[in-house]
Image (cartoon, rainbow, N blue to C red; front, side, top):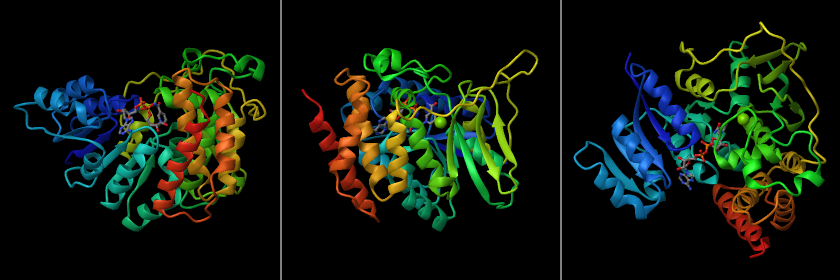
Length: 385
Ligand code: NAD
Ligand code: MG
């Protein structure tokens, strides 16, 4: 069997690094053909020297010369900038894109990859939150598999294998509740970035860690699930399951519920997406039933964690509302990470932006880009300097 040629978009991030670990563990199955990073030139160089891909792309143009020089004499092409990222996504030298860029920036390269017939392992949930209708429709037209990497969606995907299109009654997305589970606004108002970055069960990039602390992550995941599995919003339920052992569940029309379980480790959904439909043997730590365990299930507190409420509402409204929600959230999260606004201010920023930006019921791709830009500008204008 020939190796699957992998393009790792966002190779220096949490998903990207774990994807490279999976590639390194299965050299007979996978080869890294493209690596891309936004600003971490030293790690990109290190990865390029280890994996010797065909192409590397550094997002920050000012870092091109450093990367180029470090890889001199190697059979590696070096490109820089946003346009190069998109062009490379359309090239024929690879088969499968691991979409591991964070945020709206992942949309264009992922869509370009789909348009050029590449299968996708989708970690970048924002792509579907913003333009899920266009992305999934294009994938269908091109016969492209969009295989979820997000652990909840991978769980649902795994539960659906072998179901031969048996209709879904509902899906149950599990949420860990993040580092502030059970906390109230009087506590959250004083929360600082370093505390919010400390997720109890998962080690992830900064943006998704903050999204997990505010429960926006679960809101984005509801919208992601709607598009991935063709669901009506009323079929998507969120349950807080603090242990992160059940990664999500599907309930079928006969009432039967299937769950996918395991210790929280993103390498599992990453390798599942890359090797699908095969399961690869590994030695990741196993979950054991030989000591007392409690798996708990609770309703999310959407009164305290209002981001989840706002995201649910945006999903129900549809059109460009999730795109606006996502843009405002990205501005809010980065402002919080820079200690410019407080934890609860993030919600206010998002709510005010949703109220401000004109609603478009059936946006084109250009409309999505415009709504994203308008929402970012407005949200940024609300942050006091
Ligand atoms: P991260 O911040 O660790 O890494 C992000 C990667 O994207 C880096 O390689 C960075 O160089 C690149 N990048 C950042 N901004 C860019 C830009 N403007 N243009 C091009 N590249 C850019 O993030 P992560 O935690 O790996 O998350 C990546 C995506 O996967 C997110 O959408 C996240 O929601 C999703 N996801 C992550 C996890 C996880 O465990 N980390 C789990 C589920 C889903
Ligand atoms: Mg997830």
